[in-house]
Length: 407
Ligand SMILES: Cc1cc2nc3c(=O)[nH]c(=O)nc-3n(C[C@H](O)[C@H](O)[C@H](O)COP(=O)(O)OP(=O)(O)OC[C@H]3O[C@@H](n4cnc5c(N)ncnc54)[C@H](O)[C@@H]3O)c2cc1C
Image 1: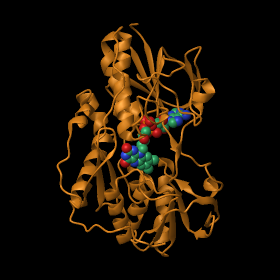
Image 2 (image 1 turned 120 degrees about the vertical axis):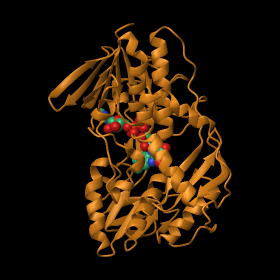
Image 3 (image 1 turned 30 degrees about the vertical axis):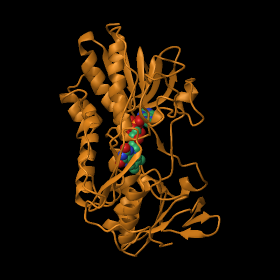
Image 4 (image 1 turned 135 degrees about the vertical axis):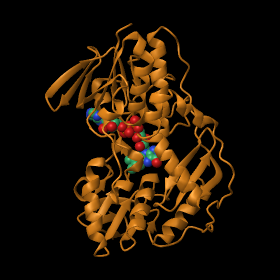
């Protein structure tokens, strides 16, 4: 195939990297690579919590791909026709159909607003479109010592609560979670996070399952948590486009793939990032994360380019280095993991962790890895060889506290 039409759906971390790499690797064969996304600006999700309290620089997708050979088409993907190999999109100029020979599906995920009643009406989720409105409301509430309730004790909830509490110490910030904060992190990391949240006067409510949100109130099985602003940082869901098109998906709508990240039912469709149904034998240790999305994007582009010229490709493999959580601008934790993502029980805290996290954000975000891919294809693979020096559990000089009881 010499003039293949290659389409990448979704310009998140996975899709953008895949498109840039694919264009580079297939340039000599005359393939066309079209990248489709509904957004005009790169959604730098690892910085979304920062946008709640300050301006964060952003870049237009059209600028990011300029000169790379990738054609950027802004538009909402409405449907796929897997028999006709077409994608139906809605653009500013009306509906369009794009034909593909090979497709990369990278439509990612979003915060699920239907897991309990009331989220749509009474809470905000982390999304680029909502940031300016929430930022204005937070500023307004700070003047009256308002109450901010953050629901969800995963990494996003922790980052949101600490970012707001540090920027606006006059606010009363509560972080509520159904289990414990930072489950999935090492004990050392969780202890540090609890200590920092305590110092920032964030009231942590663990084992607090919220059943419904009402106006100004979150209802649990035993009590009610009042709020002036509620930020919902619960689990992610995926668009149902893959299911509706007839791709084999799991119950949540994530696409079932083989060890080369091809759709099991339609191998001409490759899948990257949060859209992939994880958990099979090959992908047991793989978790949804920007690191995963970029590794998959890079892999799929290389594999597709190889397949187009009749060469085979190796199964997808990836190794992790760590999990990095910012706790405001002055604190963070780097929780080092083994290649299979198991905690090493070795952490960095304080300035080394702050420095590392900002380096990772630059590296993984639209400023770093994506640009680097244009200059030096495949550079992300270097991350596999990075071994963190052991700075000890309290590398930032902070005391280790047990989890504070601030219910
Ligand atoms: C607040 C927050 C903080 C996070 N922090 C971290 C972190 O620190 N570290 C980490 O590893 N991970 C983090 N994550 C998770 C990480 O962002 C995701 O795992 C990652 O973005 C997945 O990448 P992706 O390429 O699969 O899809 P996404 O990044 O979700 O991108 C999908 C793209 O598809 C587009 N799209 C979706 N539907 C359509 C449609 N119908 N038509 C057209 N375009 C569409 C979207 O506009 C988007 O650009 C965070 C997530 C959030 C929400």
